[in-house]
Amino acid sequence: MTQPPTPELEGYLARLEARLGDAREAHEFIDELRDHVLTAMDTYIGLGDTANVAVERAIETLGPQDDLVRELRAEIRRKRIAIGAFALLVGASALGFLWLVILATGPRLPWTEHREPLVLEWSDSIGVASMRLAICAAVVANALFWISVKAGRHSSIGRFEGCSMTLCRISGTALAIAVGSILIYVGIRFSLAPRSLEVSDITLGALLTLTTTPFALLPTLRSGNPRARSRRLGFD
Amino acid sequence: MRSELVKGHLEALVLAVLADGPRHGYAIMESLAARTMDEVAVEGGTLYPLLHKLEEAGSVKSRWSEAGGRRRRIYSITARGRRVLAHHRKAWDEMVHTIGSALSSDGRA
Image (cartoon, rainbow over all chains, first blue to last red; front, side):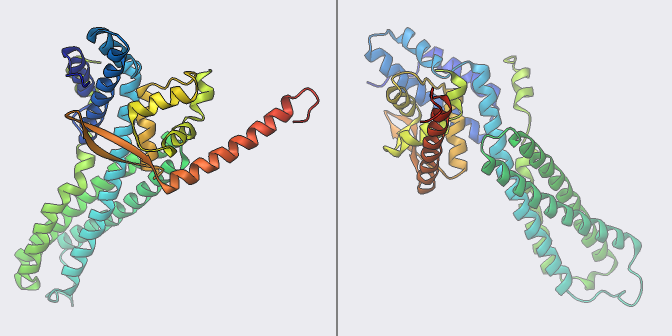
């Protein structure tokens, strides 16, 4: 017999959800825990418990809520690092390659014989350096995360994860700077010498950059602090 | 049974349960209790993160299904998980032999 969700169970899950934040992974955990508690309730009712006792015993099988929240938060963080590190690596590599191709294969610069205007030189240098940093940081972040997965439950795992998360943030920041610099470079170059650029390629590149960058940065930007949120709601 | 002793072998225990067939989280918990004559009682806060870590490491895989009008996540062991389990079993046998030798009164197993 399948038990309908009780107000006590829904209240428990709502508190848990508020403490975990609104990440997709948190919703999946909640669905999984709801099924767990309802299945356990079926068992206890089958053994002769009333619905109220059964729901209490079923919730007890999950252990103390603080421990559960701590473990699930750590798991959500791990998943976010995995997705974020990979998205940053793919995003930074693809965007770097795209702009390299566009700027390298486009028409020749009108000032190739002379020194490039300083503002262009700077935005170009900053963009290239930031893009390299973004890619390198994302590569190392992925490597550290992979090591942490392979290391299993060794005590150093938290340090690898922490470093991976920090590198994701560095990579995300560098990618944002790189994108900004590239767009500034293209904008200035276009205003100085419109014919030095293939407008259709630049438009395509800019559109792709503006649409793909948020996806690469989203996992880092969304990393929001579920603890702060649950504190605001008064659950911590 | 001392929980810290069990915790070190929980991964192997969960893989052993899943080697018998796919199960959802609560069923894994019940199987663990049944196989250890209620000596091992794992809490959800320990089991679910472990299952997700095992999935991340490629030892188990999961799929969502529908049961009684609600979503249910079913876990099953992968080929890699079976290799990991075999490794755990071998390591366990070696440890039992070694510790048994050390603890026996005449110093031999």
